[in-house]
Length: 140
Image (cartoon, rainbow, N blue to C red; front, top):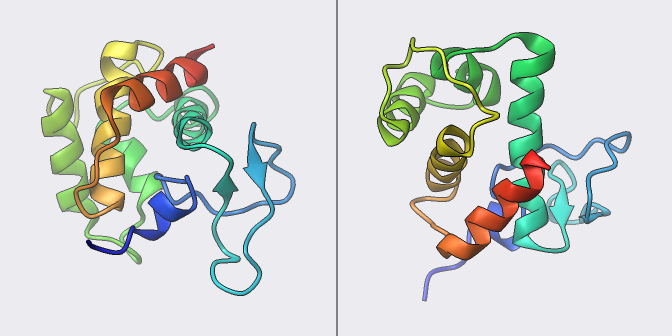
């Protein structure tokens, strides 16, 4: 059996950085020895919720309306192959990278979150019920 990815181990499938000021639902203190950079959550659903809430903030606060703009901020090119990331997320949603998307729609947010989890965690996918519940929490 393969070792779970960092995001799966931390219930943080978006690999969100730990910021003490962020009071995410279900956030645990970082692991000071192994992974102090990244947030940890009590459940995958709360980690997925944080991922969704952060994406919604990108759109509402920063005006990022396209997959290209959102993923360019989420996964900067100094750490990622951002172009490949953008293409895979756009394909999962069924839009071009430059199409405007409305993340307040579960029909858009759900496949975007799933594609980010897939990309961040070496192809890992949560059961549908876990993904749906995390996105539902993000949209409440």
